Length: 333
Image 1 (cartoon, rainbow, N blue to C red):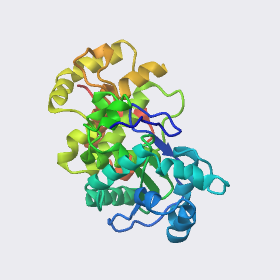
Image 2 (image 1 turned 30 degrees about the vertical axis):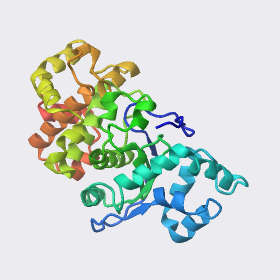
Image 3 (image 1 turned 180 degrees about the vertical axis):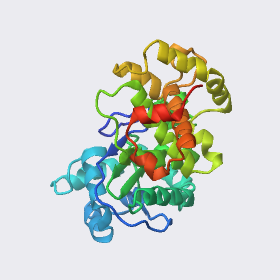
Image 4 (image 1 turned 90 degrees about the vertical axis):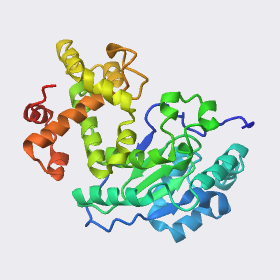
């Protein structure tokens, strides 16, 4: 690739793909598992910039809120009511790098998104647990910024974030290899589903301690394992078989360290980030450790809690007491 890489508006997130969220509202009856997919990533390059907004609002009125969000917060070119909206949008769609990325996206995802039926079933199952209607899925060119956006009834997926781990775009943007390794089409389904769950679950209160964050993220992982088939295990956790072996053999030592060093109840933001966010390793556990060990331990706690209490998935979704989960899990690695 010879063109200079541009970052449109937002700083590229180099950890977990960025998710722009708007709080959900309202309940709906569960719907069939067939995914409703709208390929906005194609429309933006095929419909003239002067008529794109009108076309979307007339033909696909259900995703008008997505278009507003995309204009304002993904590309940051302002609302489509601005006099220079079309010319600004055209600068994006005429950019040689964006044209090449679109061509590549179309070749990787010619008709459907990877494992579309599996994503549709998973979203329908999760929505059934919550007594909501599954979201419409909208694919879009992110300009290598937000991988996902979520708002009521709509899940947006930036397909240019999942073109293959070896894509030179990601190297040129300085994305570390341990993150590039999971930018493949087969990672799209678990990451998209994770984004939707994160947009729907009530997050921990600001200033929450490490164990609260561990259990919250562990709950997300547990839900993913219940929604996706076995072959997705490595993609859900983003661990290799060697990393899984390391975690299992060091689980007791990690838990003892966190308890004895009083990390579990720490509210220090940097400590929490080291334990639950993407990283090549965790310094407290050594350079052989994988990242997100705290998240994995949280998953182990949730798994034991469900096994010991036989709680239903809707019950687990409603359970907000970290103390209750920790005590009744009987977690003793």
